[in-house]
Image 1 (cartoon, rainbow, N blue to C red):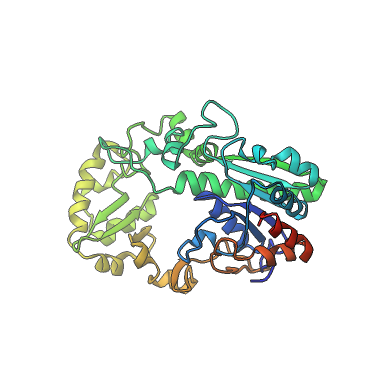
Image 2 (tube, helix red, strand yellow):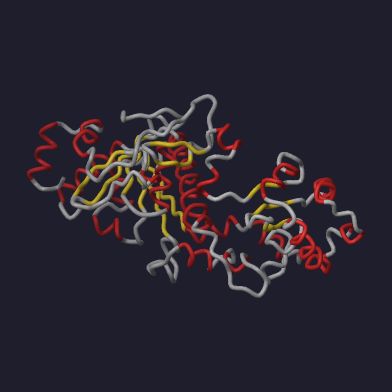
Length: 379
């Protein structure tokens, strides 16, 4: 893998301090868009599976960060970097001697990206947590589920990846734009609680206006409405419909044979439960494939509910190469797509320390520098 990739971030240098979950995913996005990402791994650590998709496309440098020589080597890398990305608890980087004040002194244009669950300050800042806890605090988890049943975790899409990784990536790129304009870097504090709350903006507005009930599963977009939900088919599979607009709802009625007068009252919430029970029976009369033949590609707003294994074989995903295979592993392709500076997956997930010497050389370390780091057991 070369030291620069194709894409709009070609030439951007990133130092990533290894973490789990949303941190690697954020760095994957930067790499996919062409950035040269060096991941600082713990010397002697284990890892490097080809199935660790979010680790793809960067090089691994293994260091002993308890060594002053390794810390100094990190600072030399940071001097040449555009972005530093870390996802430790507040204070960890400071204790390592790699906090923002030190790094920005060495590189005033540096964008210093920090991702945590709770943020850099606040009563919970130093508490452990996971996605499910972060989205619990925002109102997001409470809003997802069936009436009278417990809230349903939406994988870790809302906190870790949506509220964390994507907001950090957006924030760091905005700060990079500012640094290129003004010559001044800055710290980006991406808290998953902040990001997940931001993702809930529309629903906060609905709640304030009285359009959204606190009881989940009773609203238009949470499965409460008969025209916006998933339904089981004759063969035990599932389909989804989202026929909100009147013109789309009319096509749903036509294709599903919903001719009775009860279907006229689309937005009568009092009738939603009855209409939903009727639709449950309607959709059980045909298989998923039969409903796809009738509804897919129309303006009903319809799609089959596919498993991860099924998704790669759907005609639309195949036509767009949305899911590609690398080293025998099916995985998401680049997103978004660029038509002036097209991106590409830069390489497979690295094993820990796989590129220690070559990456350091590419970033300006001499052979004697590397030998000295080896002698000091810093790398």
